Length: 595
Image (cartoon, rainbow, N blue to C red; front, side, top):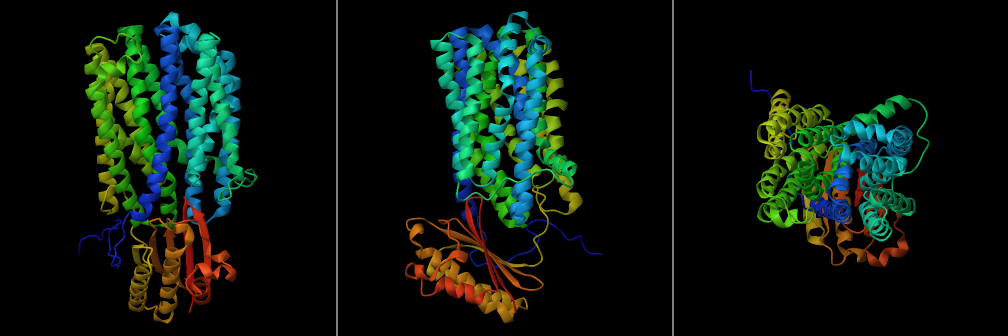
């Protein structure tokens, strides 16, 4: 008996003189990443600024009261992650499969669930804010501040959830700019109202809470502009109907990993606040507030990095473009890795300067604690990226196990043991230790799945589709178009499709060549991902490009002057069917050629 054949993403060679590269996908990812980081960083910066304003204007005890309330407020983010990421993942995969009805249903159902769960949260938490505050506070001096903040923020829970859900869904549809503006608007409005309510009107912690509500309402209003966006592919529909329960469960399953990550982080934060408050006191919670706010800013890079890749991962996975998915993940790690390395170095070099932003006069001995905390950002980045990835490619058991281990199984025992043994330094070290152990566990689990399934990498991708015979990444020039067309023809001839090879090759050449002279593409480096498959009834060519939006199916002969001689008309003549869609911010043209 021979060795078991491997089923991994590089199990067999696909011809392509240019080879498949990340050029086309990387360019789009950079746009997603840049916009996501800018928006998330601005949002996180405004949250940090909110804490700074409370600390500077009101003092450390009110600041600690708001900090104590944060795990409960974060439950709103948990709900938003549950329905937002769940719906966005299903919509992305459906778009990859070209199933518009399912994509629209996932979009509409997510919005409905977000509003309903927000109303439920408001009805339960707002009236019982004081009881909740007493249960989660370890110091009586913070209870009144925590109660005030919780009651006001909980009342606006539907807007809080809807703003976050819309931002995620917009990103899934490639509406990255508006998605970023929605998040940025929430943060900017929050800070502006902070200065008005607390600085000018002297409203105290109550003003901070109202400012948070105003920020989220502003974000919801701006997100409605999506419904006027001409390129949107997701439409509202009636989410009720047959199999509603199964569809709700599907949303929850796909959002569970990220949501549970947030929920468990809230539980861990409550436990950390309780232990540190009991062992060290309010001064210890103030130090943790500094660490937590630094983490908010740093997480903006690798959280946004992982989330920016999610819609692309979902579409590629739905299309079974496993080569593209593998290339995308390599690029994501390179980009996020550089960002995290720079951020860790900054925190390690300037801990004192960072501390005084939150606590005037600084804190003795905090430099060592911040440096120790910063080291945990390296494994945390890997855990974030892979958690999003495994959830998107339906490896939810690994994503869930990673979430449990990272936030509960490892972190809680380490908090208890190390804080009681070493005080505040131990509490900080517990974070770094838990992240390292979680990364090790992820590698062990993925390695086991790789060996069991015969995959050849920790990405755990299935084998390349057997019908795929050619793929390459090609610059959009006339010479490259002609060269690739010759190789497409030769490959199809070798794979028993000689009867249609010339027509398929001509379709490839015309699309690439005409993109190179399109007025809207002048000054842009346009590239194509070309994938050719031999299906039972036809040859299918899928071309994805990062150029200006152009739909060949809507080409009119009057536009002929802009194109090569009858290029698009030639494409329509040789193809049995031409379909087009604009997805994740790129053109996708599908050409089918039948005998």
